[in-house]
Length: 444
Image 1: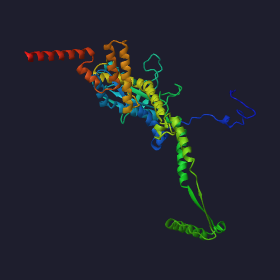
Image 2 (image 1 turned 120 degrees about the horizontal axis):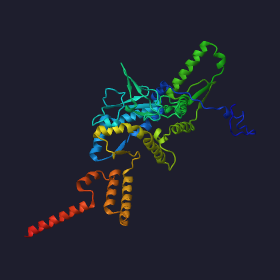
Image 3 (image 1 turned 30 degrees about the vertical axis):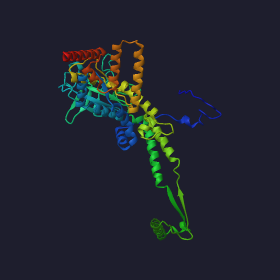
Image 4 (image 1 turned 180 degrees about the vertical axis):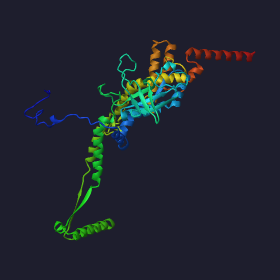
């Protein structure tokens, strides 16, 4: 027996058979690949919903934290392999199809052998290839909870023109689209296309825009009352004469801006009001924006409404969500690649090397100057307390300015001129003594 627990009001009909909402239920018409492809290629809203978050996740990329020569080598390796662009494409394909991979190519003869990061030497990472879930076929999932690859496919199959290549999961960086709630449903480990959940909202927004566009053709309609029109329309000759007569009337109206009709005819026109239609269309677009979890200022490129509204709060909230996704989804997925990338760039894996995602929100020059001034005021106030030794405090302040980029080239200048106050004091004292000796020699 099926039972339900809900609010019932016999007087108002709430929750009874009189309540039309009781007949509603959720259904899930799944989108196939053709529908997904058509939506992405043919609908601008669907395309932007797929592309924008993937683009924003990777557009500013990441800042490596290491010695300058090490950073230069790692960034050069990323540029050689096109890591940033390929990760962006893989994320787009994952959002579009529910899954995509980066294939780590090291030139090994047997791609089914496990790739151990500590076996990679300098230059060992040969290439990276991007494949969607429809190109890199996932096999049966690993069910052994003691395996480091638990929950991943035991193997992947890559179909070439002449041969099928099996690939070990250690050579694959997985990106999943919209995750499924139940592991049993994700039999191959992939998720849903992100268009699955927003499909209705996107379709309704598109339908609203199409309906308004169709109404433009009927914005103004002329109405002419002709005596005996229906009675005489039965003859083919009359119908032809009527069509000819009003074609000539419209031609004359176009030339002279004057409509000539018979004295017994009555002319009128019907005009559609479009006053509320922009609000209706904007409502549907806002629904699509909310369904995609992308602010309208970013998805639609529209100026926010309201006298005091700038849209900054919406964008900041959106950037916070993107930043969280970078750390919760993108960073774990890239960890397998990064262990190999660092070794391929440096020949080893220094434990101290790490990276931070570059901020998405870029300050204006005025904002940067204001922040620098506030930092300087705070630094002076803390230094005046004397609670922190001068040398330790100076090193901390230098690191802060190097990491946030307040003074470009500061790290190089510190390497050249010294990063400790006593270094500068010693240099100044040595210069002063040299000047005194030169003056004495000149006097003698």
